[in-house]
Amino acid sequence: MQLLYLSYTIGGFMSPLVFTEPFMAPKEIHIASDHYNDTSCLNLTDHRINGNLTNPDDIEKPFATEIEYAFIITTALCALSCVPYAVMSYIGDFDLKAGKEQNMLVKQTSICESQSDDCIEVGDSAELHNDVTTELKHDIEEADDNEEDEVNDLERRDKMSGYPLIIVLLCVAMVNGLYSAAEQSLGDYIVTFCLDYLNWENREAATINSLYWLVSFLGGIGGVVLVQVLSSGRLVLLAHVCWLIAFIGAMFATVYYIDILIWICVPISGFFMVQIIPASISWTEESVCKVTGKVMSLIMIATGMGLASNPPFVAYIMQIFSYASFMYIIMVDAAACFSFFLIGYTITYMCSK
Image 1: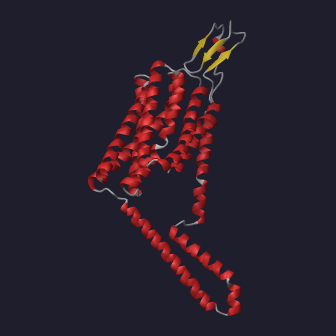
Image 2 (image 1 turned 90 degrees about the vertical axis):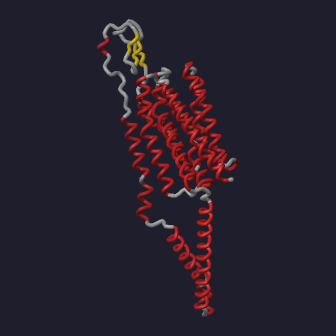
């Protein structure tokens, strides 16, 4: 799970810095010409012109953005992502049982080919056929026994039932939904927050977004290592605590306009945030119940609700109050996410005794 989620961070790192920032217009353009008494500054964000102008009408859309090319590139990449699935669909069925039978057939063919010369010389092809058939039956029975053992092992993992199981699964779903809401809002509005509240340049805002995803990528690698040392439940607890500490620092930097602290806390939060989703699903599989299609459907529904509801809400609050509300809302999301996991973790611990 950690490796699977690790691939997600690669696109998050590349998108703002490689596919978006080159097509954005600079926030301010310094212009010096005969129409001005001195070098003037055109602010493209709030449409202010600083300087003594003699003919302001000469300025008409000096540097238009070309952001549409970023969307074209993204569309092409999304189309390319479908190619492997189209190839898989064309090749045929990937059912495990069909694959097992095919492997047995290949093994039978290889045995017959390797011993065909002996069969011709000795004239004992019937005996060879019986030996091969017996060996294949033994291999199939052994494979079936292994599958049955795996199924029984998964069934024994269902350590909870009834209302406690329902409550814990709802808590897991809320953890995934709140985390996805916070992550989506952070990716959507960190650039706007840096431009309009902290008055950064476009390149700086795009860079911190990419830096966040780069550190998230490193956090995914760290998660692969940490999950070998810590249990999934403890890893989720550790990631939540560090996420909260990082955003407390980011809130402090927001109130007092400490840019360097923003540069530190926002990317560091990504190092721990990226470990929450895969670790929480692994914890559910290990300590709660088997993660079936129904369980994953519940998690994905909660994730979709978080992705759809939180960004519009953040935009509305930022418009009504202040751009600083962006950090406060994400902090609330992080605290609520941690609270729901603590509830589920506590119920699981009590039921295990």
